[in-house]
Length: 459
Ligand SMILES: Nc1ncnc2c1ncn2[C@@H]1O[C@H](COP(=O)(O)OP(=O)(O)O)[C@@H](O)[C@H]1O
Ligand SMILES: [Mg+2]
Image (cartoon, rainbow, N blue to C red; front, side, top):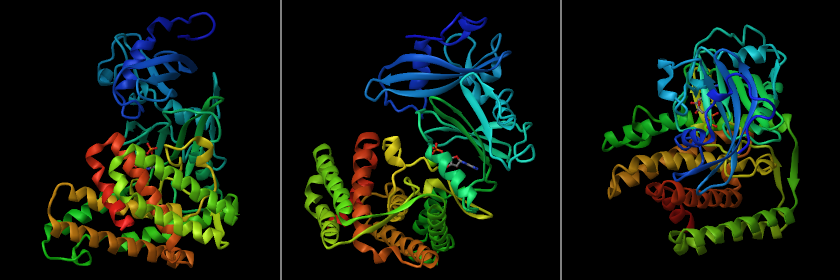
């Protein structure tokens, strides 16, 4: 393991050791390893942001026992002695802590962005139209909790700072797409304010905080739960009917797609390119069946969705492509008093960075959201196994809200996604197969959720 080129600095001996960092990483929900020993291969200081207390941004290259080596951003704060208020985020046996949890130092990020400062290997930036008004430096921060692959801090109700955990060189699509959408005045995103980058990759992204937001995922689940409380009602009869929201979200999605077309490149896939993509879907299915035997009985049925698309391609079908969200689901949406907002344009986490920026059909996002509605309902059903009545009503809820979403999308886009039935079904199939593999690996008790969809799609 190597650390810090050059002579050791004053408080170097304070910094956590590689083993301590390995311990810390293995306990973080954003760390990709799933248990087992973690090996830290390299630790590098990107910048020392502050002297007393010492605040350093570290790039930690780590290899989980069962995973792929990656680089992680860790912000360590080492005050001159034990600091009780940070005891819950201690790193190692010395007096070092996870600095993102200390509101005494987190003002450094907005302040350095406002100043467009360069520190060590990190360059801080703000968007041209953001000044001290939009980027206040006196707001206390709080780390948001949640099922996150990164760490997001809220500075009062003024700003949200997303600190990327896995760092890789190249364009960060989250920031790229936010800036592009902002430049064409798309109202459906949080206004970007600033960012921090380094030659090793983008480290942090500052945005407007979306005040009063409720995650689409929460509202959808609440609606399904309410439906189950009222034994005899249909989805449209219960007080928390989600359909009006689903329809508005459909409109917002279509408008977001239009803004993406305006701001970023578009293209057309020729029939042979469509066929090549179908071939990739087919290969993917074969691989998934090998990994998850529960897919085997449905393989032939699923294959039909791809064969139908292949037949269209052979008949000369082209497909319009553009930049898309890429990882669109209810958890990436916030319902605010100012309407639905879309978050997190990083793309599908499982895909390599350059593939995430590839042009794709906007129906990819439509399929993602439709699958998410299905997940929301099926997840609530998990609490009621062997209850055909509830299963029927959950399916009714999904259909009702999927229709509403597509109707809203059609109203804004001028074309109903359901008209592209073959393409949409292939994309839904691809997504459901991906979900089965993901759940089988990560959350086996949830594999029944996408398997139910697989059964339906294959029928
Ligand atoms: N600008 C914002 N305003 C308010 N809350 C936000 C904002 N950005 C993110 N969040 C909250 O943080 C969560 C995670 O953000 P996201 O960008 O999706 O990060 P991740 O890559 O970790 O999924 C969101 O689901 C949302 O609840
Ligand atoms: Mg997200």
